[in-house]
Image (cartoon, rainbow, N blue to C red; front, top):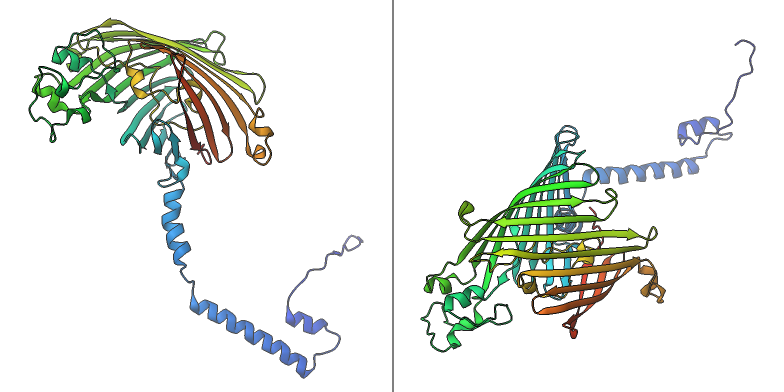
Length: 459
């Protein structure tokens, strides 16, 4: 049309059509060649018919053991819900070794993590998390369940309710007072065995009457913490809340025999003040204050405590950083049953994470009893992280090293002046590994290690 040249495509389409090929073939096929084609079509039809009638076979190893059982046991389970996927829940793998770790104090630790969230609006979001861990060496199950209601994104306003259990507190002060022991030693270093003390005879209050093997000085700790947080601006933040602890004797019959309480409860209003000197990217300095009142919601412990904590990560470059943490805490008031010492910023991490958790602010080899053995503490933790320091230069293994760390930590509490730890750690795509050496009062106290799997850590 319009006297225009007709455009002809220069592309040849490969069409597998035997009828079309018969039309364009210059010479027809002879009977032998036709027979070859017929045999080919017949054989292809037989194979197609056998496949359609046979159906899919079930591979037990793949379809049952792996796809049904293994996939749910070794991989995380996640699911979104809501019209716009406002909510989600995630469950960590049940038998995945990547959620296991090892430390000198707790031995092999099995961990699991369950979390869920629902977003009502851009400002309002409800989140819940269940973190648990079982220590094979201590034969103890640790857990924490925080429920967080974020109600103001601009001012980081949220209400958080958390329940969980902490360390078993080993204290002999209650038993010493109960047994009328007036010697001025009140630390966990001196544990009197009542059955071996002159003038004290006990009836059979345990199945074997073997008190020296019973944990008569141990108390279980269950806690409830309610916190409301609000940031006024990029420099100041405030926390108001209530903290409650319930300590129950592991061997309550021992205390009942002397008509002494085996359960101790503390309820304390708490306030925390945050200060960012130069903004959110600057060091954070926090002051925490707690005041426990006797007879407040059933409390029988009266105490007052203050803590100051400062921490920051200084980045020398994109992959080099210095982590520094300094802190102190002390009791300004000690009532009748202040024996159960507990701190907000100085406690054992019972459910540790991976490379990016609080490794740089922890004491890896410190016995858990020291966290609750002194009415004051002074701490300092320093960590240097870089991609190439020592192991990265070694042949064979150097190529797998992603980052290395050097740890230096120091602590001053009653009977430890000071306690220090030195450590070195590496991380790869698969795992983290750290080695530590401890010194008590300048004397060598031992070495230990810690490792954890890192693959699929951020899920």
